[in-house]
Image (cartoon, rainbow over all chains, first blue to last red; front, side, top):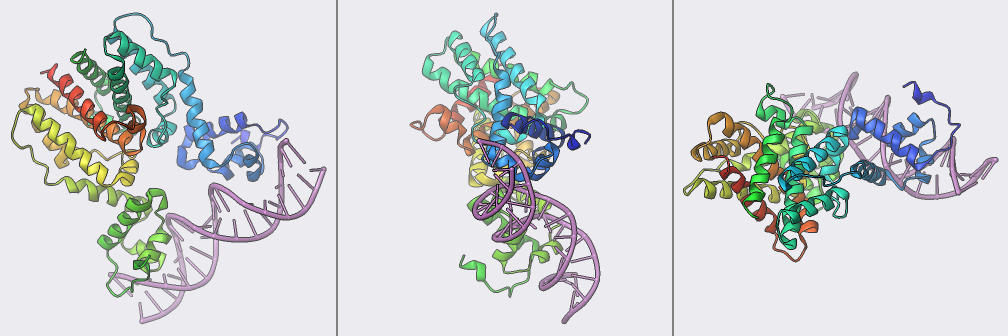
Length: 189
Length: 189
DNA sequence: ACCTGAACACCGTTCAAGT
DNA sequence: ACCTGAACACCGTTCAAGT
């Protein structure tokens, strides 16, 4: 609100637009993001945005890509493959919980799980070192990513809390699920 | 298109509205559904809808509830708990694939997994007969539902096909995931 | 009780015009 | 190259008026 009236002295830039858009989404959800409101927040004419972003869909796509790259420092680390998998799952979770509103939208769109992303590479490395043949590691990695994604979606939209009971710790459901998945993988190595 | 011009001789009804809305969503996706277009399809004034549906959100909610009730005949059936769980997962899948566009929206909303729905009851019964104590069956059921939901979301939006490879059979990823989950549950009984 | 027309406060986006 | 104002074709929803 205070920054809404901020003077337009610094030039408009794609990164600045993305940052402002992310602020709106984090605060009030994807449905609160409109090109006109975003422009108003930036103190600029709505149409100026179109010189830096193709359209609203591209903007949301850029937002998703932006937070997905927050996983850049994801590394495999020490320990057994079970411990590595467990740690990776919790990093995915931290990433999702940091931008709950955006994640809710991103999971529905068709390319949230990037085949070449750092997350994906770490996952495949871990599964390989667990002893899965490469083709199998590929497929197991895909379904693990999908299932953990679903898990986080229910956590982010409140379903998980509703189902496991509000008296439980925040990650009770997630922790249980991760161990269940690890046991499932263990049965296949 | 032919039915768009259909005479408004039969009275407008909530069920008729829901049916027409579901037709739009199934054909062109949730984002193609607007109160105005829906009214046009029904040959009626947009505002007439508001006498039968509170608003657009309530309409989408009604739609979700409508297809979720398509699972009414879900029963546990014979076999080991593994077979029962497997069958239940595939019934959930069939339900989701029958209304892909709607499901994409429903999974994001906060109450797709209904604690008292037939799906949920069947799941808990199966887990109980597998030997899980009641409190544990409750929690395991919740995370299973969430993960299978995530799985179906990636299948419905094309992510799964992209990740496991287009040359595979349609349910390769799903089948793998279900067995992995069953193995995970088996490790806990 | 149900339907409607006009109106309000919004959208995303195109296009021609400005600097 | 970047920004803007006016305009177009839409939205969801309220409200007062009709039957």
